[in-house]
Image (cartoon, rainbow, N blue to C red; front, side, top):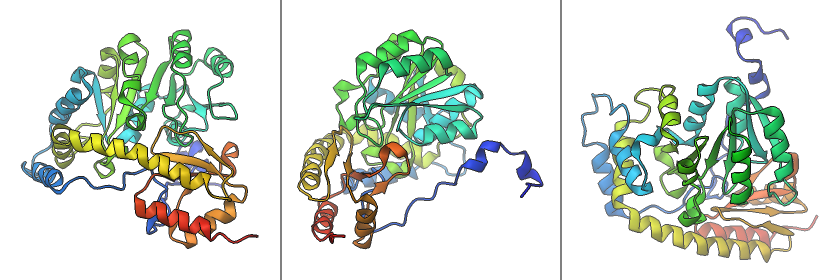
Length: 357
């Protein structure tokens, strides 16, 4: 049927997309890579006080200065080189909007929003297949960078949904061989790897590298705070694309309070997350219905099940939600967030009663 009216003039790429609809919220939620643990009552109360201790009838600080300063101290960087966004999603949209045309490269499989945002902003997605074990293929990647000359290249490290950590030496090689491309290292899950392993310093070494981060995975998903640390010239140009007042006063003030006063709790949470990941790996490895668990340095594990579709339905019937994918390279795999002890026990129990076909 031929489209008529305003929709006929929208980007053709939209026809192949679907609006994001999260799955039904079940009792044991292991599908969104969120933190399942609230921080302490005193910290949350301090954040709530800060959130509403400002005149809400005024616009927020246009550059989110209180949050920018707190984040700069947290990251030990120059705050003038930080671009603030409503989660990583808005930062990606700002990047896409700044270029407007060309190609956006990313190892495949990876974070789905790289492709979606490319299409909705008029760029062409350029997926480059990873190896069978989800590691980078440097020759394939270099060929794509040289031949296609993408304007942007995204590398999630650790990668979502595989959990793989792309090798620093390969990324450095690609960055140096493709100087006209802006290379984005997405460190949304880096806190679960190790801050010592961050490639934030690449943005200091290279004029064509920026590093992206977020509070969403470390306990503040509801606030929607993301950022990009970039060379100053890049940050200044991107700031022209950012919508004014894109972060609200409650978000700015509560997130700044979290960064200033919640460091000890954050460190404790990250240490506990490593132990939780080991426990989840043990549960999955001990199940007769899981035949492989991919190595992960994130707050989730990717597990392969020979009877994945039926197992997924079984878990849902036991109020356990995990993530499955339509991507061909991820057929048979399910991504499982760390969750809390109760959720992991529910997963273990459900796996234990999975009926034979």
